[in-house]
Image 1 (tube, rainbow, N blue to C red):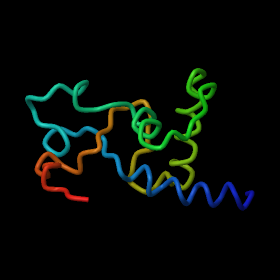
Image 2: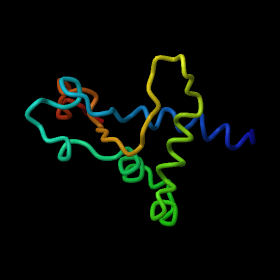
Image 3: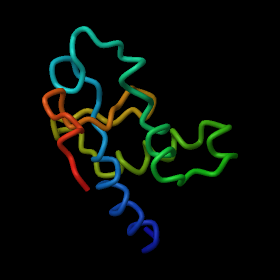
Image 4: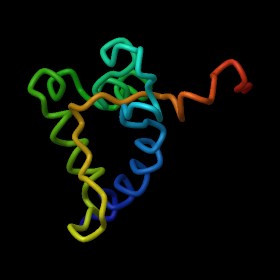
Length: 104
């Protein structure tokens, strides 16, 4: 593997860990509409980091690239699911952590 690619893979993991999948009772409340709370992972990454070219986004290459990067170290026996970049994710850490208490 090219050293630059390996470095890119290591740097992408912490970035994606900023987002959580929508899970009722954890990152979304029962009364909330998932479409209003979450966005596809590719949208969140692009909105926050502007890392994909327009051509890549137009051809859905952003989804394929992001999935390959974040799933590169995935092991079948890990007990974890592969990340699907089309599924809905949120920036929320949990439904119990309100962003008004986060100061930066």
